[in-house]
Length: 168
Image (cartoon, rainbow, N blue to C red; front, side, top):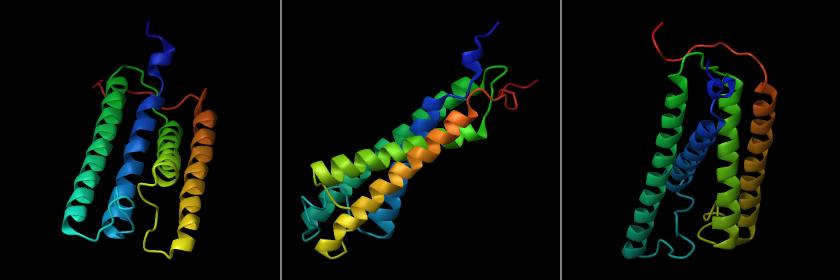
């Protein structure tokens, strides 16, 4: 008889997926599409070709880390989902991913934006207004943590549709 806990949705997989998705969103939307900042743009402003190259390299390393987080989350989810009697939960999955994305925003917002000052959310805004973009980013992360935690707590203990990925 399988341990009932081993059939539950792997919250750690959802958190890793959320961390990776949050990092990809940040990198694709803020770094590439909007071009509000790059990984090291406060330390190395985009005022020379060497600095552009350095920032592009670090943006690529950042995306590589996001990719590893996503692959690890998918692997953990796949490992659990292959078991008979796997208890899939949409709420648990979405909640865990929101938790991961919220953690990403808070760590990125506190460590990279405030402590290390690698960059700010919107470096195209006037200097005096940049802090408001940073605060908004932190509030967005906190909101995702609250929503994710609520979904995860609400989903625990509920019986969901069972079925692994194994053919029956």
